Length: 73
Image (cartoon, rainbow, N blue to C red; front, side):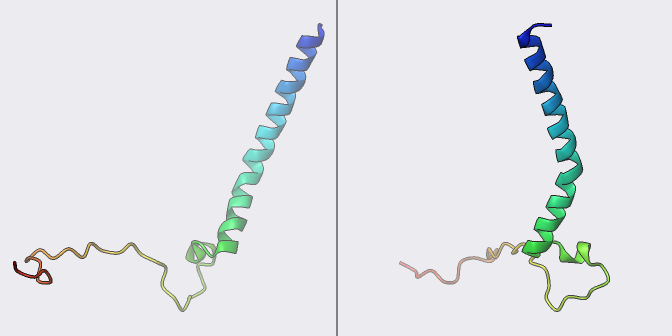
């Protein structure tokens, strides 16, 4: 086998090894990061009642009856 062929096999082996390690480790890393940042704590600790409410998106506060704050010209 030529040097180029051996290099391709080594690259393929390294690629498969890295992919396998990433697939196994990414879930754990993501969980650790979320817990460190305090994200989705109710999912990570379902039996714990937290004294705060998780942030919810703000509702659109547009006034459907008209704009009462603008001055008439």
